[in-house]
Amino acid sequence: MRKTIFTLTAVVAACMLTLFACRKNATSDASSSGVSEDVLAKIYNLGFSNKNVIADGNGNYIVEGDILLSEADLNTKSDITLLRVGGEEQYRTTNLVRGLPRTITVSLASALSTWSTALNTALSRYNALGLQITFTRVTSGANIQIVNGTGSFLASAGFPTSGGAPYNRVILNNSAVAGQPQNTVATILAHELGHCIGFRHTDYFNRSISCGGSAVNEGSAGVGAIHIPGTPTGTSSGSWMLSCIGSGQNRPFNSADITALNYLY
Image 1 (cartoon, rainbow, N blue to C red):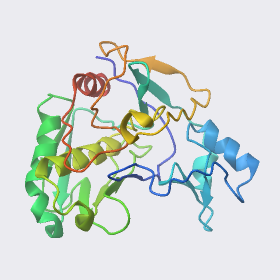
Image 2 (image 1 turned 90 degrees about the horizontal axis):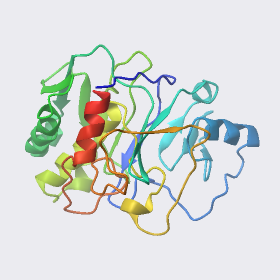
Image 3 (image 1 turned 120 degrees about the vertical axis):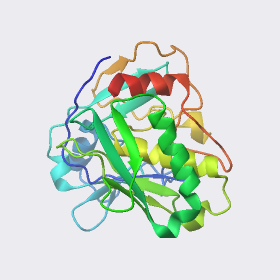
């Protein structure tokens, strides 16, 4: 099993999963008004889309609709590997969790107690694979805290730190997921935990796979792709890390997901 460490600056990025797209503020306008060409080039060189970039007024830039990049992020040399699954899907990694084997503790805020079964299901999906990371629930002092939030998104999370720690918070919008089946919320939580341990969306290069519409290829930004041994050469559908999820959907790990998780952990 190959273990690879990827480095990027300590991440202040958060990826938000909505019922229709991971892009919270997606528009049809590809312009990035008021953002300099130099900044757009740096964003592209980090491997992110430089379309529809928004300057937040605090020296940060919002890319791909919901990922926050600071000035420090833009000036850090990226070391990113794209792990290819099939012809169009990719697991795009930045930092990974280090210090393996490792137990990652997770807590659930009392305001989200309705989703206790969903969290147990999400954690069991990972733990059933016998990875070098094991998730366990605690009531306080967790490595990853799942907390309630509000806004026009279902959930959000970030990526591991440059020191190899998992991202420490998942925000779940309790109002937005109200009425969803436990398995749908389990899929959402497993997706956000995937970000916390270093996974980006599998349909990064073709968001139409899960979001519909026309294919959008945001380019590799000059970064190569490694096909993960044992995964299909065609499109692998149903991944837990697809950008978009429909109401009531359940996405346990498919065979390509399992191969990718074992490849990294």
